[in-house]
Image 1 (cartoon, rainbow, N blue to C red):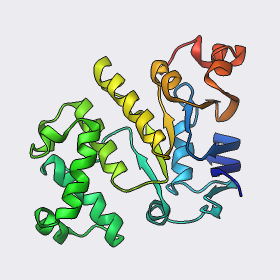
Image 2: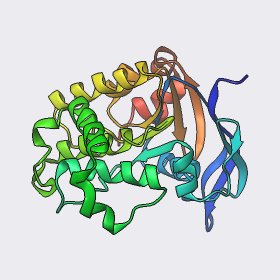
Image 3: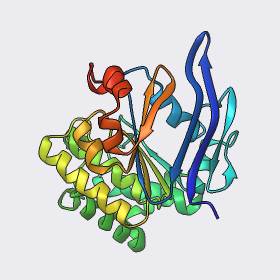
Image 4: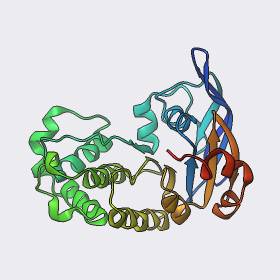
Length: 253
């Protein structure tokens, strides 16, 4: 039995005359943290969008947990256990912190989000307790009754991480999880990502902060101009001349 939770095979994606992804092959081992790095325009976000069904590849296939998910709708892929945390937090600023975390739990349970769920948010003890658990993990429990619009950018990033975790993902895709955070909050997030992996969750992260990448990643794939130019352990990537030329030794995003 394969222990690969995600298998991206021969994927191409173009936008008009621009080739965003070219012959991408990526295998993510279950229970690991796999980082995807590269300069701006390398195709990192496009690759994640293909994995979650927001974009259809021109060629190739994506397999999750042994099932071909190419062609499935994003909500179907999400229900299968693939959860993406976006670079720009997708939150409800006029609701409280804990209400924001409870909403995706309702969606996971019922298959969709309905407006009348908000009317019963405070009546759902089990979901509230689960939300409090994840808020404690990300360090936001003391802010649970605060309106989200007043949170700092770093706290909003941690809030969306809790909103992803409460969906009980088998594969968590994180797009710049430490963007906008102070060094202290970044280090706290690093420890949280390590703890999540220890619980058996698989993580794929896009991250510009090399301190974060080398602290949490088991393997790293390097994208440049829509192609994977290198893949390996953090030690192998750090010493790879192609990576130094294309990314680590040049201008970082």
